Image 1 (cartoon, one colour):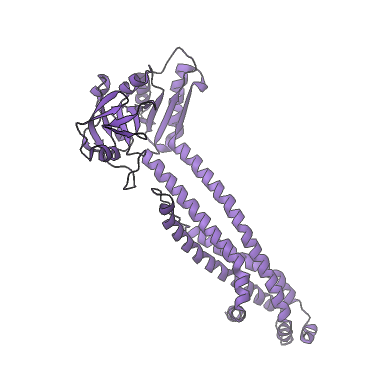
Image 2 (cartoon, rainbow, N blue to C red):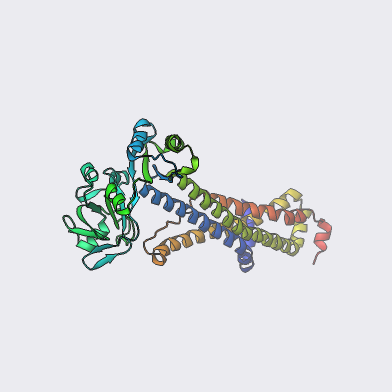
Length: 400
């Protein structure tokens, strides 16, 4: 404790020099805190986005590769029924071709997505029917020109009174039978988002696109922990039809999420290593200032050794002083890092409306940053401390 108090007194007696010495440590720790917080925020944001789409979902794309055999809708339904342990539900997913413009009266909605699905899709996609009803089996079977629309389109085009109204998709007129509850977090519900969509029977969408088979499906897994088994079950069923692995492609949202998280982690790691250069520079600065301190206090060291101080006592004194200097820089860097993280969290929605990323460093990043800052001080302070401990007391007393 006496050594620590002495270290604080020596630091306080040279405040400006100490602050300049700690600057590298402060910048390095601040950068690490903000970068790790940004990585955590981006990871959570991506996970939230995927949760909205359904992490337990898979997408199946079928090209066929010129095969005379095709996987029919009934065949794909049977695949799900035959694998209840891994697969829970399925829906065709037919995007109406982009040339079909959505209109209501004289207003055109260029960014509204129009998709053909079955009666189960809205619940599969975690939508809630806010008004009216969802698509039904008979709508699909009888090719009825009915639709369910998102909350954004309901408010913008019909002032919230969409049930029973008609909306045009290209030359085709659809009767609105249901309105979905708002799904997006943004109160403005920007156009082109999840709440700016129209869902029609997939049989009608196929007719508009003039296609005879469904080439895209959305599948819900029974348990996302068995994503590999669920994917394998679908792939085996498709291989039995086409006997060609290039005729289809199956990927799960959990698989895509894992790839995204891996990419984010890699970027954060590279940026953290770059920020670590500042910590290295800070350590060199501490070594430099401690060498200067040893030169300035040579006579003091000689007096202490002449009075019986051992080498290890002198060594410990200067190592503690270097570690304390670095630790103070680490604490300041952590506080500054949290302040910048909070400021950045508040600034993101202003820079990118509709987006929000909570930049949260986490306790592990704080502990690691503090530990590294102290460790750098001790490591880079050891050489000057060793030099001080090995001074000849007679020569030290003669030093001017």
